[in-house]
Length: 316
Image (cartoon, rainbow, N blue to C red; front, side, top):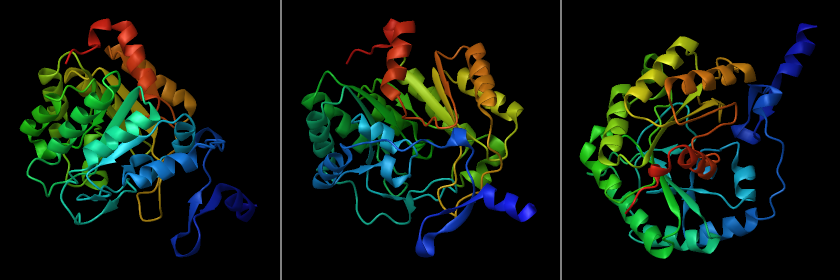
């Protein structure tokens, strides 16, 4: 009986040397395959422009669903991160080159060809750069504004090692949404996000709100890494106190066998309870669910917030 149960509860992931055994995902953590005939066209466009997406590099479970709608999240500054967060599938190491001066224009060209009405820009951590890559965010924002001024732009930045001047550089380029994810509760930072600090992330978010008060400030975290419900509520309170308007909460899913294991899969009702907790704290929007990721349905989130508070439409 126990052997049969074990077979039902585990599943093999990957092939060859990279394969590993994983607990079988609960049904609510599995996205059905999406028919996406647009995928080859998108891939050709991105490769032709030498662009990266976090959808691919971080093995996002929503990639098929988003790409089927023509939505992508551009990842700036290459595909090698200078940090080694133990939840993230993006490659780590020493980046081989500095910022590509063609990248802002190439992103803008992709935005124009895809006719994106909402653009999400993120990046790897680039602790090797004096400004952490803030200048590349600003240059890309500017290029998008020139190529397609009607598009709204959301940035999902690293913590820039706490350099608020870098945050100011990005805010000066007038993003409609400034996102920085805290990812997990403070107690788990050393294990989950070595090289980061919870208070530093809060300072980035507070600075973004102070520097760009009419923009939407957003943050997100994962659950299932060993945190308690009370710790999550404390994080939500801290985010709200820092001026965060929107929060996203999703289930951590282990990308490879070298990453942290999942401690627990939360039930849908628990995500509903966390959403209720967030709303009670006064967030303008809370997205909480097993497959929620910070960029998932980002455009719809911005529209929902602007329906509640119309003055969150920034002027340039």
